[in-house]
Image 1: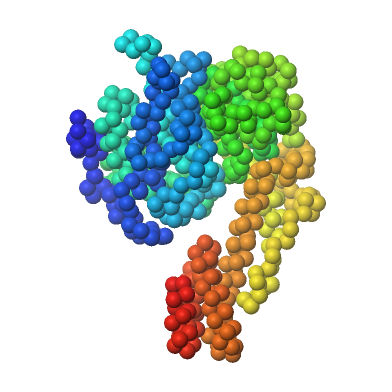
Image 2: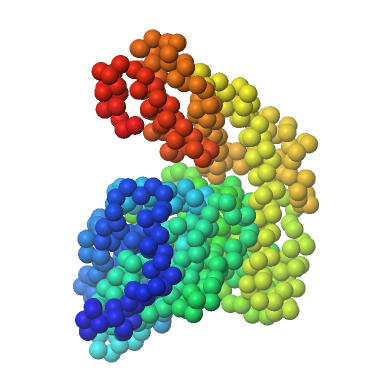
Length: 592
């Protein structure tokens, strides 16, 4: 079957004339930051790095059979990681279809042809959804079925989407729609899928997007940093556009939180603390889908804080970081690993915190309270489900939330409603913890009246742990949380963690940029032409060069609307007042 036919009808979606997707593409010229016209595969690259097909060869083992688009670059190390991470471990016994997710290190740095625009989108995302330049996500649809015509007796193949975007639910949905049909129609169908994706509008945060693929339209909205945490924005809809929509996704990134935490929900308080503190944590599960979902649920439980350490939703003994992460010669690293191979029960038994989960099933039965077990009791992956650790939580358990969730299980409350309760609990806990830190860090900002246009911007005050701890007496988490416990001990531990280091570096950068923006605005409000007329030509030329530097830097600063235009007018008026020979030189020095 030809690619053309597929695009026009049999699965491939034609360019729905007058459709929302077509209108969105027409609006792309209005997007900020556009520098160059879009090239073929640019739209595809905004969503995916590539699509891989991984098969099993009797002689070679797992091998990448197909990469689309064909020009997509992967190093040999990346291909090897994709091969091993795209198949469940043999002991998982995953017959039929299985979906899961993995994350792996990028071997070399590459830039998309329109990376400036993608960086602009990234700036508008919440911190926990921003791309990590050092990592890729792999979204897998694995099929294993009996086939007597093959030597092994089984058909084993994975369709894998490789992306920088952590939009787990979205890509899970996309794969669920395209993979079953791909296994029947093979490569021509895959070409049609990639062709559809290359017609999608870019992933602009805050916009309702209509994404046509293989004859259906998926409607999504990517969150922005302006969204109120814990709320799901209503997708904009009109009767005209919604007649074409097949699926409207309420979220692009969230996992089924309650289903993931159900096996260990008596310990949600302790698990939140372990993730917050960046403690080494391993999830031992019967399958990659359960390991990956649980790891992603753990990482998301401290949202809207970003988890700054490494995490691997599915990790195998073939991973390129296996030796680095399993060595006994040093303390286990700050990382969350999801594993399924029984070998890890022995290899990682020196790790301080281990979660063992069985098959995740949603039943009407209330899970039995599983006590925290001592690590020495974990000998194999067949050990009973539970949390194996000697960690003692700083905070008391929230019995009210536990009872509410238990009651929901007994009353067969929908999983979505249970997840909302759990997500709200984690959000309120995280906010109660982070608000005192935000308040203290805001006090490190110099007063606006100390900003002079003729001096360098003032420096931020340095962070003092003692001052911060002292501030908790009057403005601590007790103002917003009913939970009792050793909050100060928790803060002291947190201040030594990767998560604090990452959070504070981000906040310090934002505040420094704010100071630079206020300084730039103060400069623009001065009569710079009048100043230049009272100073020498050398001083005036020096000012123009400094203003041009400010103009270049200002694109990344949170300045008031019209500030950059004002600055450009100042530069132009000062240059025009100079002698002609100097005008020519200064105009050539950078663009004005």
